[in-house]
Image (cartoon, rainbow, N blue to C red; front, top):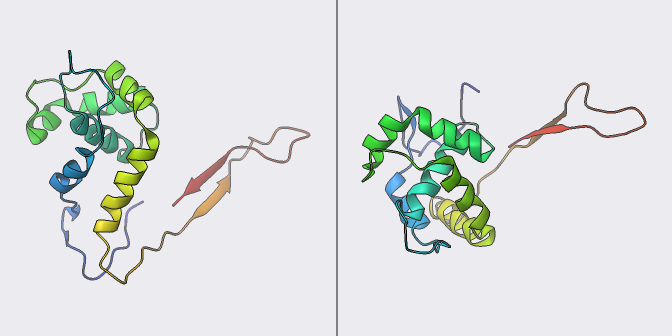
Length: 149
């Protein structure tokens, strides 16, 4: 996709639409860490931010997200000012995703998104779906589908 539809009042530069990552980070810090304190090397909010960046980069699997992060390690370490000069290992990312309370994460992310909507306005999300060619097996009525929002 080469374009994005944004409101006329939104802050868009020639680099694209800019979210304040510090405010996103502040919301992510409100999520309780399910890990035991011993041996924790990265803040939970930092790992969640990296996971979100990997998801926005098109990765859906923990291994893919970890590889996406690893390929951008130098830049992410510099931009996020990580105390260690390395990004979290894929096992750490997988454990976080398995242990994280999805309800709490959805609640916090919903609050973050609502905080960026001016009072009295709404967000409209267009949805489009397609059935993938060749995925409907004989004697079946449904195959795999793509959904874009």
